[in-house]
Length: 252
Image 1 (cartoon, rainbow, N blue to C red):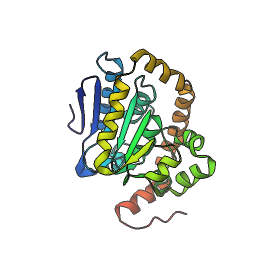
Image 2 (cartoon, helix red, strand yellow):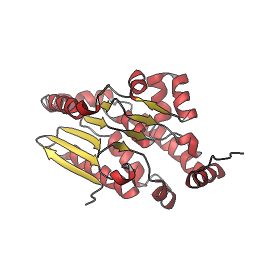
Image 3 (cartoon, one colour):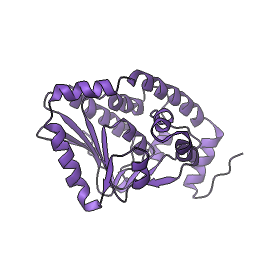
Image 4 (spheres, rainbow, N blue to C red):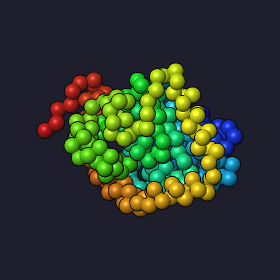
């Protein structure tokens, strides 16, 4: 069992914590595998009513660990990354995300598949794929324009800049934000309220709201193929080389 993805059952609430604070909770392939297993197990367990996602210390997740990512790129749809995506996409139980600090890359896109999302007022979000010579993932190219409109989605996906909690709320990515010291308390109140609701009605309500999951899964597959093709290209090579050399990339 990994110590970098932990789980704790408190009553009927399963809290899954990304716990790699020394790397801003950046995710590796092993962590994706563990994450997917915990979500799938929670959905098949009669003991769990609500799934609570959070990061340890001062970050939610900084996204992919680039060293691990370069050594173990997602080569096909059987990668642990896609197993994690599918587990969250198809999760039948309510998923509540608590975002403190950084939520970068998949740290932002996974929020599109949670049911309720709350952040600290100082949280920072980013969709930096374009900066790395990559394309959006986790169906963000499809879902984000539906939430924010094409132009705002284009700004976030084509420029790749960080944005704050206020912007995240305005575009519908998060439900609300709170002062750092109040976030956990507010999230726990919401989770306890959810856990008090009738479980079958919750499950069926979510199923109705997620009726387009098959369509979204196809978008994930399409994005994934282009993403993997881009990984083999010169743009990604230059972007990652520049990142590790701490210089600006030069794209031709």
